[in-house]
Length: 198
Image (cartoon, rainbow, N blue to C red):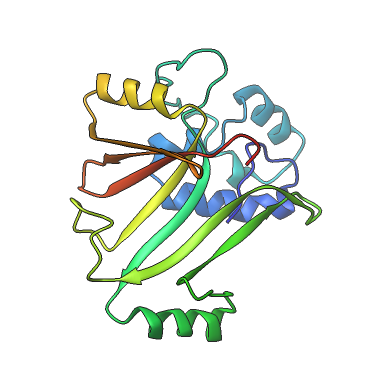
């Protein structure tokens, strides 16, 4: 699901935003739809459906500490990785039934596109690995999400200052910079600063 930060076409976005409102706690809705209250009020007065304006009276939590300049914490999803008891069989199922072009290495890379379907810089990796692998350790979860970040070292510093469980290891290679943090439920989260231009 691709959700934009502004709702400009109620026929197209209304249902998606309603589903987001229903799926997330009220305290998070304002983060998903950061449209200003006055814009919502104006649009509502123009007779647009009211169900997309549920966030109008919700105040978002305080913004996270600034990393300096215009640097964002997470800019997108770089990959989704999960384990399977029978990885080849599950890979084949996704390929056959969902049409995912699973490669020999066990996954695929979805190329990002703009609103017109033209490729833009960036990919999201999707991969199934063996349940016996330890790439998600110390987490016991069967999945890991890789989040793209703008400035890995600045983010890791802030996360440590905030008391997050950031693993000590930071990888810096031709594929970019990687670090890992454990979320409050014990899931390993991968943070990735891609190489310039990616």
